[in-house]
Length: 540
Image 1 (tube, rainbow, N blue to C red):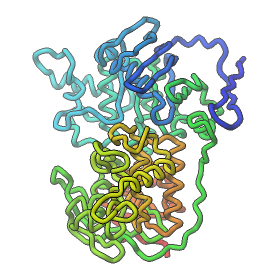
Image 2 (tube, helix red, strand yellow):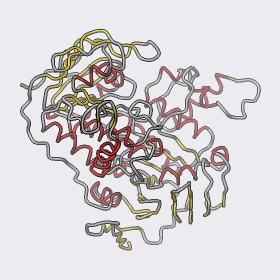
Image 3 (cartoon, rainbow, N blue to C red):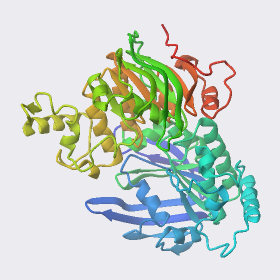
């Protein structure tokens, strides 16, 4: 028998009805009751309850600033709650550090890895442990790591150095670190954000093996399709409170979850009208460049983007896509030619690219995309302070600047107390909105957008996608660099796949297959013959 569970979303729309097992006897791995956590001026968790059953994957969803990361950081020992109780397998615990949490069998795999590149897999796994105390028996430890990896279906070479591994392999090392320390409960923060589709499938297989042995997983993700694929239950948070607790995912849809997260219906697909392509706006010809370690990052890259076209760059992190954005926007030296509107911009200043109508949404929004210690107003007028009405001769008209900033704050829903707030005090999602507002409002001929929706919730992502499609309809050329393959397939007209600094495949979205793209992203052969593409063969 089942009891109907009716959960009204906190906004408009009909209630979501699911069924929850009645009288479930599955023992709890983690139980948190009445968790309260305050920061200056912010109530991050307000009387939050959360439970994780043994042998399940429990997804935690919420908008930016909903409090889910705070809750998980409390469970992982990074924060101490101001009130509330935590029990691990029935025993009350009070963590003073992540070491205490790991000792209780609870470990967290963060989105940004904490590995030492110059050390081997085994050395990274042993780092920080009390054993071996004096002498490292390498072969014995490597055999233990190999056995543990094989047990959970993870392909890894214990003797390989971290810098030699792909992003997916590095994530396996992070998971092995926790399992080697005896973790029975694993918290995973956006675990598929930097993985190719095949690597995500491998991760899911590993998680299923873990839960089959009785281990439990908390899965934090913005990818609703993945949540439905891997999670047994889902908990949704909004504004520091739980609004849907432990709902079974069976029978739920992405639209259901999105509505619970943002309080309104969110479209699963956007209307991409046909746009007649204009002249070539961006023309990249045989460009090569080095990364910050003076190693080859781009190897003879050629591509084109036309007016009214979105070209998506699909690649696993670290394959040259970041350096490609930098050489186009004047932030990195290169060899080869780059033309924007027929004018050369390669090895020129960022100001040159700006004058040619290039807008840039960088991946590093804090250090590159903004001036953290300046106000929201100052950041929003950075590209317009020489123009009327903001400029008044050699001076900036403060009243006009504030009026402009207020308008953009309203239009782009930037959550800031005032336009005088320093942007370093904004959440990551709101800082991203501010950068997008500044760049889009200049009406550029070319937009280079790198991870434009990173850190945004589903409602904000929908808004950004609409803005990009509106720019496309207005005739702008857009180079979209994203690690979200679904985002590229939803927005782009053409997909170029990068691997180790080369364009290894190029295809119209209408002909794109996720399996083929994922294979190319991880260095597999493209049996269709689309390798070593030259200038993108844009549909005529």
